[in-house]
Image (tube, rainbow, N blue to C red; front, side, top):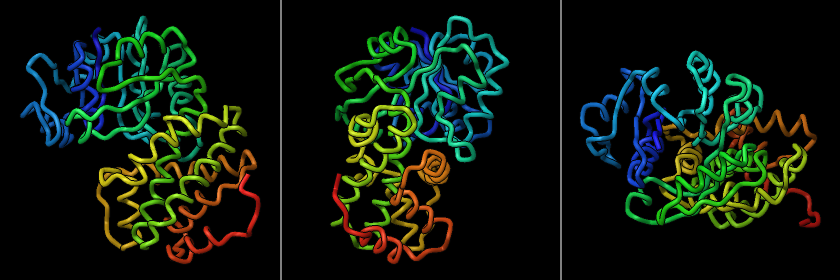
Length: 318
């Protein structure tokens, strides 16, 4: 199958490497001048993966889209709407989009498939999420992930075409829960990093239990299945997000508490803002999300905010 990967960051480059490894004809696109793209174009490798000679690398977006049957997108979630407007200039007949990114639009709270549906109406779209880090996959460590879509035919096709011994896929059955769960686990990851930075790591178990319940209630209020919060997109991704040294969001939270600068993308920052909007709109109390926002944007001292979070009024667990 002819697959194009749009985006050449750490995760996007791995996806292209993986899909080529399992037999697909790959084209990788990145914007000219972008440092990550220039390294790949010049060396056919970065610090984590290397491409075979038959993987095409280009900065020609028209070429990349027009030659593909499946277009996989892996960019910053906050850049998706603007990028989708650019993609609308191309002919999408017979093509489908797979989103491999986790986030909610900061200003609107929109899910990413909603953005595609708005900007590229009629184009089939799927969501590919779940646990795993490039550093572990490239060492042969397997994981399980999920592909979800409102288009059942596309979902079945992708799971069949993309599965391997390295990644076992499950069929997602709740697109709202899959997308919201995948996005919000990054906010829980930031909170976990704050606990690490404040030397309160022992509270991570409570964070995981309450974080999952908090998100389950939001998913239900949005019309999804609350059980999705307990699946691969959210709870199943906690080990890779809440504990792993490779987690950008956990590391961001830890360094923020310590007053250190983190210079890589932490999608949970924008997602925390979006969750504030969604929580108010749907009438769902979201104390963990609120605490993260108070620390990041309102100048509240991390130790005070965390003490208040875990010292809330006693109530039944469920």
